[in-house]
Image 1: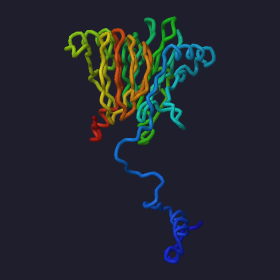
Image 2: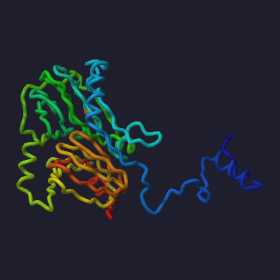
Image 3: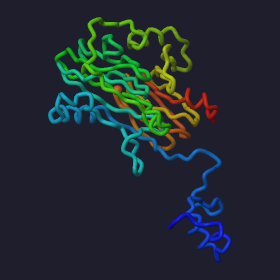
Image 4: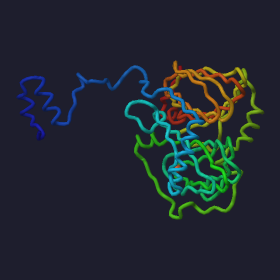
Length: 317
Ligand SMILES: [Fe+2]
């Protein structure tokens, strides 16, 4: 239908005709919308969910037999939130993925506007992330940052496969649209020097030493990783002593958790699961979270809280 004229609107005989004319004019009525666009509190669109490292590791080992080395940088498992129509995001703004690079393999360097970071799970000495021309060692429990537009690739010079968990703000960038991506012209970016003390690397041993020096609050210590920090996410490590934990109020921030060490139990807004080393779980926005360790545990948390706070939308209750 062509763009209707003002005369057609004036001559419309009933509501149905008015709706047809409005539709053709690219205007929607605000008085009979199917879904309100404003509502009193956040919709709980994303659901609590949990992924087991044991299962992901077996799946990645199988993928290692079928997915060629040329695709090593893409041999990962995306932890998509199990809601209808979603195949990517783990929470509204964030995605997590398990990744493996086989012994002796490299994954080509690239850079992108989304911020990324990784938590190292199982590696042998000789596994590196190359960040802006420097080799950062990947040892179990290490956290490595690759902020917006940093070159990054991987070189596994050990004989063993290297497993880690990637976290990115891609769903947020996708929504806001400032997406840029570029492959490195040289494949894996050349890097000779090993930079163990890079500010982009938080070695697990140092994180534990810093936790040791913090005050213990009912068997829980919490450390914020940084500086440097990423613009959209904050990173925290919690140490929970056996039998201890926390009750988190619901917040408008989205949180992804990965288990660095230990085992325990969580109740996320009524969904219960047991977690152990390497598992990932999501506490989407506006969901409560109760968490107890059954043995001494270190939990890694990635939250979009800084971004939500900067826009003055952070609410907790
Ligand atoms: Fe990347």
